[in-house]
Image: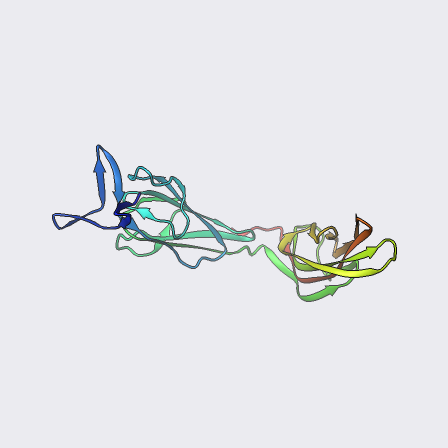
Length: 247
């Protein structure tokens, strides 16, 4: 909790020339010296910071976002998990004890006594092998054959789709091109679906073939018919998970 004087936050308190890191009244802490929480560039991980306890009566308990205030005496826990398709997450934290940023076991719990810096990393899961990389566009339902692609095993795909709708007057049959919609997927496991407003594209796998199915759709709206269709699908990467695992 911050301490204010005439509506202005007080961030440092000295008594007899000595800086105080906490102030208490009747056994309750109402002031804690503020410290910064800095997240350095992290790769392929999700980092979570939680305050589990604080000497400040009104300091919020729970998730602490980057930029939030932490206080002297706060009990903090930082944990790291790898993103999808990444492994071996590592956590690095500097708690201001003079040891600098060092690797910590996740979850890492400590009591705030200084500024805190942290970050995390993870490496790609080597059990995933790229079987297609490039630019392959489709303008209708079609099949992409991957030579020598073994049967079985998980397949993931990176692709994008464009959808366009047309407004059709049911009396004059006049067509007016309307809005375009976009959807994409990054290393999404098959089967998967990309969606426009009402139409979609389905992506599945059969042996060594990737099957792209365009699903048109119709809707009615006060004298008009809305017809929407996928107009383009672009595949840029396909990967297969090998049966062996990284140790």
